[in-house]
Amino acid sequence: MPSEFDLIRQYFTHATPRTVLGVGDDAALIKADNGQLLAVAADMLVAGRHFFKNADPESIGHKALAVNLSDMAAMGATPRWATMGIALPRADARWVEAFAKGFMVLARKHGVDLIGGDTTRGPLNICVQIIGLVPARQALRRDGAKAGDDIWVSGTLGDAALAVAAKSKRIKLKPTELKQAQQRLDRPVPRVALGLALRGVARSAIDVSDGLVADLGHICERSKVAAVVAFERLPVSVLMRRQLQSPVAQSALLAGGDDYELCFTAAPAKRAAVERAALRARVKVTRIGRVIRAPAGVCSVVVVDRDGLPLALKQKGFDHFG
Image 1 (cartoon, rainbow, N blue to C red):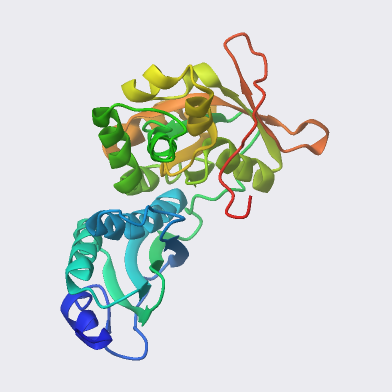
Image 2: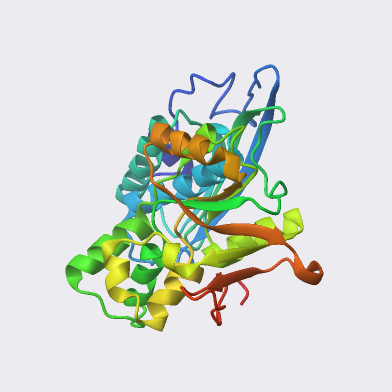
């Protein structure tokens, strides 16, 4: 059975061209470019909570980095370095090899150096920290939304949560439909290029990880505003559109999470600039609503139907302790 250090040497030690000192010492050494801020984020994936225990290890490796890249995208930051702590039930070299492949293929695609971390024995748990660079005063933040802003979202919403609902027996999907939804759950596409293109265009941004309503609500809270979203404008796949009469599907769309799309606000005068940014990033964006003044100081998100009437929302987003 390979040792902890065997696994590190074989699967997690790679060339780090953007790093002064990478894996193999007590700490990594990195050098920030002049005039740049360091953007730092961390996400944890726990077996049985963030992914099914029988999930493909290569997909787990992909997702472990993708969710962190999505945080960089939401900040308009260029991802550069990552560290990873991983607890493994046992030293299964075949599992680790597949996991490392999924992680490193995505890392190389986005120019990310894996520069350190830790391994230990325990219930399967992966924690990745990512560090990126963003020019001073150009970071996309949650606290910049203004009343009158358009609200936009990238890609489509809800398919990943549909996969969770189907595997939890709360909705029934055909095998081909489940495969499609599962792809969105296991292999999210971080919108890094869009985040970079939105520098100087968007006023605020967040990635949709816990559900559209909940995450847009975080922008509202930090910006001291409210939001009105038109249900009919929400971008959905053909799969989701076929399921939309189901309350489970509607909840997946509005509150399911795991989309890792970008939700952002921009002034109406920036509509053409938003479209150009999306074109450069090769991703579809959809204008779904508007930012309004917070009525009586209530920084809420209201979803309305085609007649402009508010929808009753039983669930607003994913909560680890809910």
